[in-house]
Image 1 (spheres, one colour):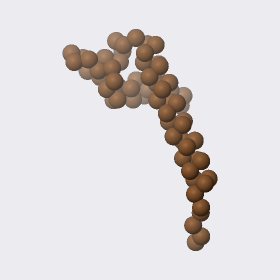
Image 2 (cartoon, helix red, strand yellow):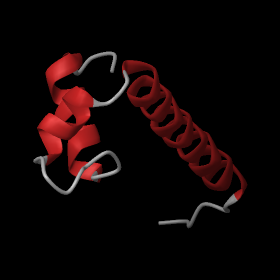
Image 3 (cartoon, rainbow, N blue to C red):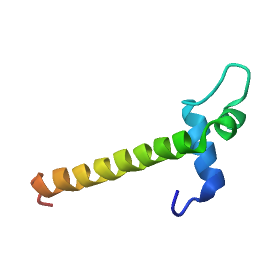
Image 4 (cartoon, rainbow, N blue to C red):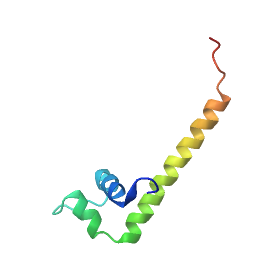
Length: 68
C-alpha cells in the first residue's frame, strides 16, 4: 500500500476478484469484507511481489552478461 494509498490498494484488491460476492460489485465486496482478511491478502500480495523482485535480482546476478 505504501506509495499508492488506500484507494488504489482497494481498486487493486477488487480487480483481483478474490472477495467478490455474486450480488455485489467488486469494490463493494471488498468494502464489506472483514478488514483483517483484506489486509492479510494485501500483505500476501506484497510478499509475493517482493520475493519475485529479489528472485529476479538473483537471476540477473547469476546470468552472464553479453558482450557488446
